Length: 250
Image 1 (cartoon, rainbow, N blue to C red):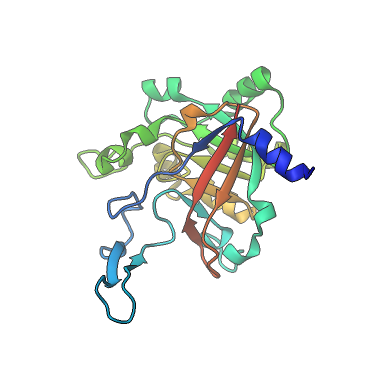
Image 2: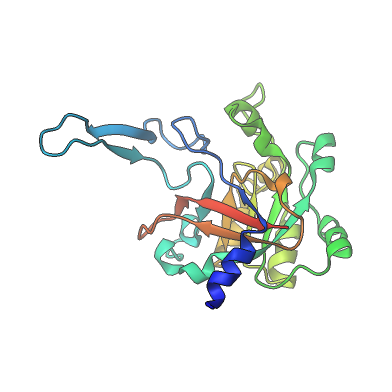
């Protein structure tokens, strides 16, 4: 009997959850990306062609589009890009920190070290090499782009996210491998406004770590004990790429 085949049979007894937003021409991306950067599913070779009767399409999108992975070179000059990471770097133990209750009372809520320690008191210490995802249920606002951006009357973004103290604790005290969230950016918008920068995102990528933005369905996975896989096209030289993210959960 082949051990991996048997392991796969066992794995299929668990629940497999797609943590990826479906991609189309209206998928979310940062408002600073120029108009015309997204054009999905354009026909370049149509049915009825005498050479071969089939359909071929083109897909144009920025690297940071929809549910996507960011590589260090996104914020760090000369930082590692997509080709640096092999498939062995893209499977992690998954820890989901749930701050939905806090967010209901404060859309600018930034997760704290105390929130992380409360998680650990319940589930045990976050393991080295883990992927830590921040559950806010913000992805439920999609496909309303204004809602997912939290756009106010002045055109500013408003949404929850990470704090610098939290990401430093996770990367320096727990040595995690990657993090993720449901919002457009890493930093809670109020924290980014105070810093005048996406300081948390810059810190994470400067550590040579990875992050995934615009996750969904975090409410469908166990907060501890699941495994997450992050897959993306094998482009070279990319600062970020749309990703298919899957969790295997009890």
